[in-house]
Image (spheres, rainbow, N blue to C red):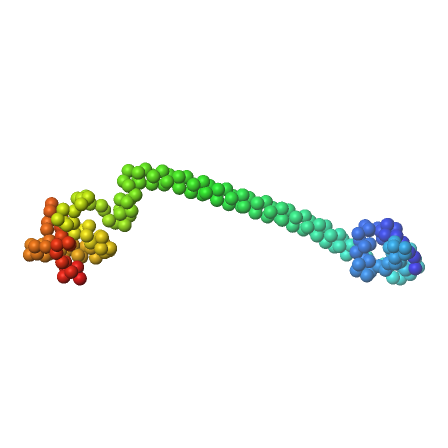
Length: 211
């Protein structure tokens, strides 16, 4: 048995060092390791021009070596492409994140501007109409001009004002106003002044109409 270094074996078989390593991995060549150095173990019959070679020509492994080299080259190419693909994917994700943050910032700025505009409009509106009137309009109750007296004369009070003081809801007040209007001409306890209904709750009892 003859021992050769990897370089010597590559020169001996006229192939690359990678091909020698591939043969060792496939088991078509034996190797020994001495003092941490790998050597190729070659039987005498594998040497060219030996007597046995005439009867048993060495196996031509150039095709397998070529396949192994191509596989190594393709693996290297695949690894490179995978690296490029990973880089492109990271760049795309970074671009998407940047675009999303940009869009979110635009909406935040627009929301802030809209809040400022609404605040200015609301402030001017409230100052022009008064808070109480705005609340009534939001509830669907338009304020009507009423005669408000500091001290009621002869306990006369508008029916609408009286019903509000009783805590009635708008729907209930509307129904009650209609009931009083029907009794206006036949009930001396109900008065009409300038198209509005008035009552005297301190002078008369209205429980029959309010119940």
